[in-house]
Image (cartoon, rainbow, N blue to C red; front, side):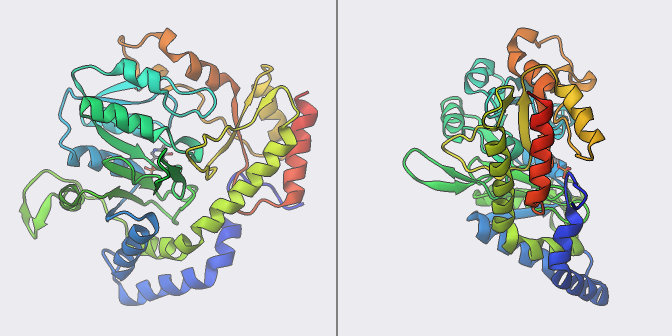
Length: 375
Ligand SMILES: *Cc1c(COP(=O)(O)O)cnc(C)c1O
């Protein structure tokens, strides 16, 4: 059996090596490292794939979130609501901009933001909601848009984990994850579903005016060379990363299919194990399985983590601490009773190897090892 990896970037690279190597060599020959043709081509390809008017490439997914919030004109003291169970980047940029983060609980089955908790957290100071499409499936955007409309709030989708997922509205309209709110952001970190070979990110919007603002903001607040109209940042996607992404984008749907196939194998194998809860997929979204995350309900999650490692099966706890309990984000405003789901999830969740190169022999070994241990 091939060695099992949490993420297999090498296997994936071997299949696109010729295209990637040729375009990187071309960039080296041309020296167009910054703002070269590949950046513009990838931007146009991604706008086309997502069906969104504007893609603004930037340096990483954390910058994308920060710049999106700057572009919307959020100001010190504005409250921004997001999920307690997510990667820290989401709340980090809220804090960095001196906005007030308001963390709320998530749903136990999808791990996405809980709509009732969201409604409860709204105050006259609330200005924005940041739903995170966690692990690869969309949050309940229709309900979120309704709440946002009622209270006049911006919606910023953190789509670092669900690029390629499709959202279906009650009336049958379909949209790509990240193109539903006022603005969406993503990350091209190597292990993400559409990853480059370094850091990268992007912001999406259908709002022409906001797109214009954001394009200047990523470039030192310049709208005309050496005229700085607003305080911006320096956040670029470089040509080499754009070339890698341009080679991978046409394969994104097949990558998502490969992940779904592995997820289906896992879920079938665990279906009759009463101590394992497999991922639930909401009917309004497809799931692109950035992570395949189980809940282990017999209290043996930590033993399982070690047992799998001992058997050469990498695995991870995403996330071991809820954000409201992190040192950097603790606040007297929070009440433990409001986080019953995240407080439970941190003790139960475990993410299994998930990537495009898993084969049946590996999946059979992983599922057998797990089922033998959790009975
Ligand atoms: C990865 C990730 C980010 C940050 O992306 P970087 O490119 O690493 O800065 C933000 N939010 C979520 C949910 C992520 O998974």
